Image 1: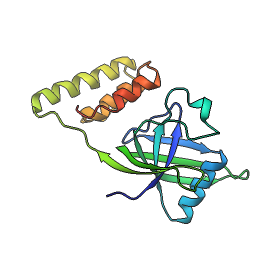
Image 2: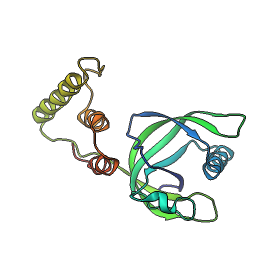
Image 3: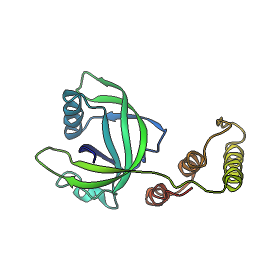
Image 4: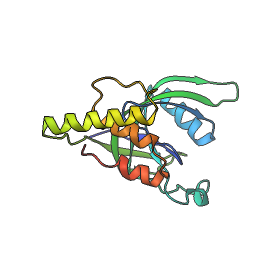
Length: 180
């Protein structure tokens, strides 16, 4: 069983496993969240995507969020003169939020379950798909994209999803697919 972690919801960001993301934390409730994490010597939180018309209830209530997001680990953290935080976080795993708690804090906490991808069983099929994805991404970037020669299918799929011109709800649907 996992321990509850704070939830940091954002409108236009998905945190993919292996991705590194800079974040500027300035909203008072999330500055408090980072202060609480630092006081507890914690370096993890859950990053989720806000749903639909989140703007309508953002400050009055807890807007709806998707229940699948990313487990973030803080790599670097600095507080500026205004009290805001600049973070560099790494995506560790896809997670499903369970038991979301609005408790007495200004931000929500949730338990979570780590989600694992279902690998392709046939090595030949997996390799063909991996090569097609890699080559397609390199072509898409006009040869300027640097990818590890043995990058895995799941990683390549994530890179392709980030590059696609889709709205965030569509990207979320793809993010939730666990079989390669």
